Length: 128
Image (cartoon, rainbow, N blue to C red; front, side, top):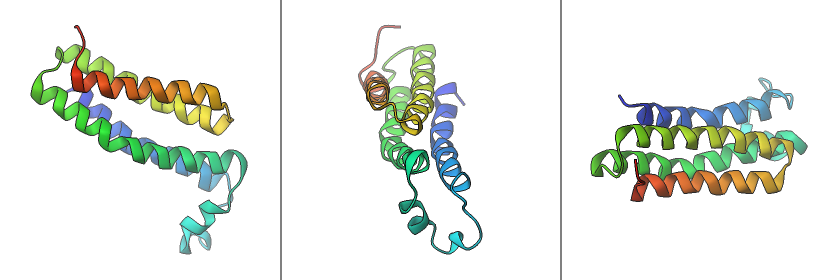
C-alpha cells in the first residue's frame, strides 16, 4: 500500500478524534450515549466547534478518497508526489481541526482552501 492510501485511512479516522474531544471534554457518559447526536447539538464553545470539525471532516472525505484513487489509477503525478500531496492534505485537516476548535476562523478558512487545493492537485496532477 502506498503512503497516499494510508492517508485515506488517516482521514477516515481523524473525525473521531474531533468528536472524542467534543464528547469527552463535554461530559459525555453512559446516559448521553442513549442519544449522542442530541448531546452533541447541545454543546457550546470549543466542544461545539470540535463537533463541527468532525462533520466537515466527514463531508470532505469522499472527495479526498476519490482523488487519491483517481491519482493512482490515472497516474496524474509520480507516486512520491501523490504521497506528498495526500500527506499534506491530512496534515491540513489536523490543522483545520485545531483552528476550528480554537475559533481561528480566518486561519481555518485558509487551511480549508489549502486542503481543497490538495484534492484538486491529486485530480489534475502536478509536476513531479
